[in-house]
Image 1 (cartoon, rainbow, N blue to C red):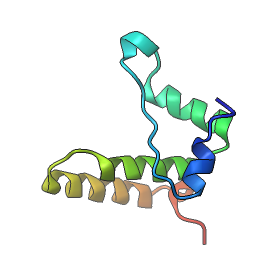
Image 2: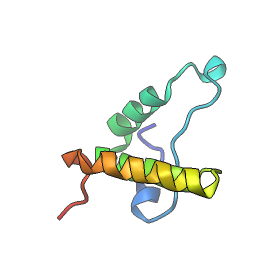
Image 3: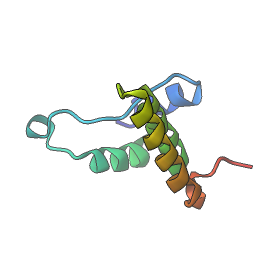
Image 4: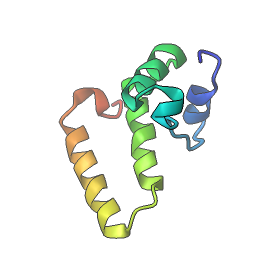
Length: 87
């Protein structure tokens, strides 16, 4: 996992997402996948948040639902100092 290019790709502006397979096949939760990604790739919590925010934007959702979820996500992120963009 340390050699996976996800951090390099993200930092170069390539849209990436982090997800899991069927739990009966991979036996890993999305939370565990996020933790492993941070521990082994060098991505920061803020970068992981940006990747996840992009995943929401790329999801196949009807417009009103996508906009409502994005507003909720952004409001929640505004309360977390680690998720604020660098000054």
